[in-house]
Structure formats: structure tokens, C-alpha cells
Image (cartoon, rainbow, N blue to C red; front, side, top):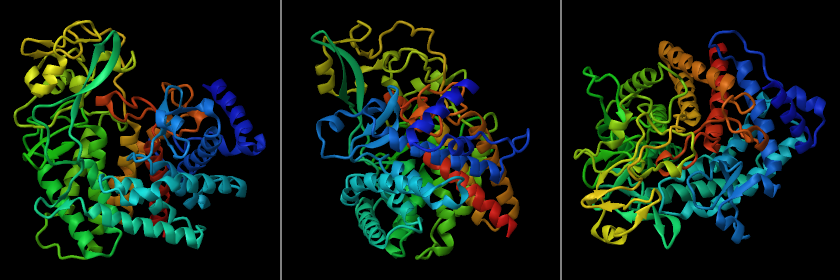
Length: 558
């Protein structure tokens, strides 16, 4: 590990063209404050310095085509701006425009610029590099403010333009342009709200099942219609877009946000059968307000605990509780959001008790995880992407969950048209996909024993930590503040010691050199995408958590 770090450090000195004496000092691994799980302000500042150096490095790597893994359109259309998203195929995945993650890359940079006073060796040249990089990638997001086909405008706009407003040195004309984009985006997001259902619709697209097929001798992955898809889907991630609306003083936007939170609190949670006292509410990923049935697009199965979904849920209600005192509407007809958040904290503490950096789904490592994956309950209506996740669609070492094996499904889950399209077709395992009334997407033979690693999700851990520090900072309940902050400290200690890309034992070999901060995030397991790899939004919330740690401790001192 030491040799790898020194070689990477030498590479860093060359890439960012600064003196190695300064760079060695600023990237030096900090000495742990104690042998316990303590996480100090010194540790937080060291993490921010590391993140700054990494994103300086990434800014340089973006000029090197050999370091990039671009989407096809990024190569064919030179007029568009593609945005860093994750590490894929040993390079920085450059994402096409109009994706929900595109605000996070400039957002990380604006966060670092805004926290400059806490970062060592942040010279003018580095500041200029980061400003120019952030503003360049911000350009592609202006048009998003008018894109009414997505609910993700909080992620796209508020986590980029909104973060930029926190940077005190932002030029006035740029600041005004960014404020205008935010105001336009809020109005656009509000168009997705239904007064009848009292929620913001998440997706307009209809889910399809991906099946690996052999067609004319060529291996393809094709999508097929479901017989009974959702009709009005709302995902728990949508809780993260409410702060975008609440940052405005318009009562209508507050009404939308609090109504959405109300319906989420009523419909998005379940309790395991073993939780007879109903102490630990867990969030479904999706609730279909057309059929009034829940389920998961992400997660091990339709009834499971997708880790990042639990984090979105918790963080979203932290922002709701924080906004209560500033609400522009009467809140007499609403649930007790504070009690709901307390219950969610109890659940978070419970699911993180074994490991504060969770598996990508909290149920994935259970001995009977396969039962959750294969359970198509009539009480749920949402298709889970895991049903079509064949072994040939993921890396050889990845095991999505314990008991991972080919599934035999009812062919009736696909539409009549889809079944006609699949007649006579074979899967990549050489077997017929339709066999009588059964659907065999991944063959019937056991998967290779090489599938051994159930991946974790550092992005979920970072979101939990940022949310916990945030609550601890604004809460007037000293006991709760200390309790929340203590759990955040445990998470950040583990992330810092074992998941930074300069320290991760099992991370991808190029992650440090490419400029990523955290290893081992998991994005979209059901679609076989971004598994056990650095992802920009993981870095975003990790940086945020460090900043919030500093703010929390400063508040305790004052």
C-alpha cells in the first residue's frame, strides 16, 4: 500500500504541475486522532484537503482522452458537454447531457471552493483551475432548468447552481444568472406536482425488462414490455428535491414540498415481520400512486432495504424538519415530521449496527437474500431490475446477494407483444427464453462460484453522515445532537480510514490516479451499472459531511 501511495503521489505532482514539496505536505495521510472510532475536525480538514487535491487531479485528467470512458454521443457530437460521473472500464465515465447525476461534479467543486478556509495549501492557481472547471460543466445545466420531464431538478440544479451561491467570490453577473436558473427550475419542478395525489411525479417512462438475447448470431441486450407496469411512480429519492423548493419563499412551493413529504411518510414505509413493535421503518424505493402499491426499482427485491434509498429517505426528512420553523404555510394538517424523523433515526442506527458502511442493500448479505429477490408479491406492483440481472451482465467477482442464481419467472409478467418478440429466441446461456408459461432470462445452470463479493455503498454511508451532522447542527436538543453526531463520526472514521482511494484495499486500481475521493460506491445494481466503483455523488456527500462536521464542532465551541 505504501509503495502504491508513493508512486501515485509522484504521478500527482507531475499531473497538477506543482512542486512536490508542497504537494507531499498537502496530500500526506493524516495521523489518526486516536485508536478509537473518533473523528475530529483535524481529520475532516485533512479529508477536504485530500478531496481538493483529487479534484485538481481530475480536472487535469479530463484533458487526457486516455483517462476517459465516454458515452457514445460524447464522441460523435462535439457540441455537447459530457460530465464526469463515475469510474468505468478503468477511466472516468463521461455522462451524456440530461442525466440526474450531472449536477454533482460541479457541485463537489463549488463545495470545495466554499470551504477554502478549511483546506490546506489551496493556492490561487488551484482555485482558478477549479472555478474554470466548475463553470465549464455548469454550462450544460442551464437548459435543464426548463426540462419538465424529470423530477431530479434538485439534484441537477440545486446541487450545482445552489452550491455555487455559497462561494463568496462568485462574480455578480454569474451569481444572478445562477439565481435565475434556480428560479426557472423551481417553476419547472412544480409542474410535475399533482394536487389530486399531492406528490411530485418521479418518472414518465414505463419500466421494461432487460433480457440478454442472441439475435442473428449476435449477443444483444434488449428491452421488453411488462404486462402490468406502474402508472404513477414516486421514488423515495424525490425527498431530496424538496429542499430546492423550500429554499424559495413562495408559499406554493412550500405547500408542494410539505404535501409530498406527508404522502411519503404515509405510503413509503414498511416494517419487517420480525419487528413486532414497529420500531424500525424501512423505505420502499417506489410507490405507485396509480395502483396504491409499493415496490422497488432498486434493491434486492420488491420488499427489501436498498441502502441509498434509506439514506435518501433520512436526509430528505432532515431537510423537512429543518424547514418547519421557516414554513410559509400553516402546518396544522400535517403529520408529526419530527417524530417521523426520530423513528427514521432509530431505523438508521439499527441497520448500521453491524457495519456503518452498508452493503448496497441491507438485506443482500442475509442467508435468505435470494428469497427477497425472487419474491414477486401480489401486494406489490413494481418490477425490480434484479429479476433480469444475469451473471454475464456483471463483473465475474460480483455477487448481488446471497443465494444469487438464475431465476425461473412467470412469462405472464411480460406483455403479449413482448412474448411474441421472444418466441424462438435464446438467451446468452444458449437456452430458450420462453419455455411453456415460464420466462428463463438467464438460463438454468448455476452461476460460476467466482461471484463472491457483495458490494457495499460508500455513497449511502456518506449521505447518512452528511444528514446526521446536519441535524446535529440545527437541533436544539443537545442529547439528540450528540447522538446523531456520534453515529456520523463512526461512519466518517470508517470511510476515512478504509475507503478513501489512497487507502482502500479492495478498490479499483486507477481510482486514486483518476482523481476520485471515495472507492466502493454502488449505483444501479439492477441494471448492472456502477458497481463497487467511485461515483461522483459519493464524493459530493463525503465532502459535505466533512464540512458539516467542522460546522457542528464550531457551533459546540461557540
